[in-house]
Length: 168
Image (cartoon, rainbow, N blue to C red):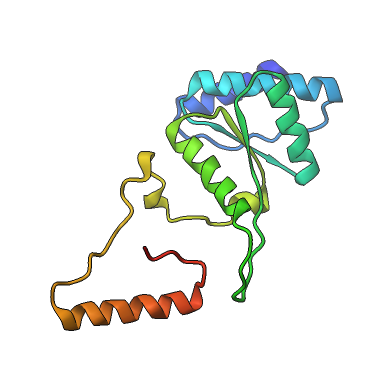
């Protein structure tokens, strides 16, 4: 069965149409060995990290443990809770998610483990996920006093909706 999987994996990478491959029904020991070997093969075929989607948080933790024990550089991409009202909250999950995305863009990770719901939540715009993050747009204040006041008013309006936003 692994040979069939490896053939399918190689074909998708060769066609440059990398598609998801679902695998189920493996016993505990076979599951761990399969997971580690499949990540090694995928990394041999491509420089991109492997995204492993799990059914739930418990399965994610198990996959991270198996991959780490197998010597794979792996990061966990956690789900964030969406908050629809203004509160001061810990940004630990946001920082962790950005750290994982940074590791992906810099090539410092072989695999990322997540749930479908966590992977689907948008963190930052795609154009900002470039190596080095040096393309963050900035808007210097205008030398024209009236224009500068207008720009500062706009910033204050944005800050009302986003109290934790650091506007420098």
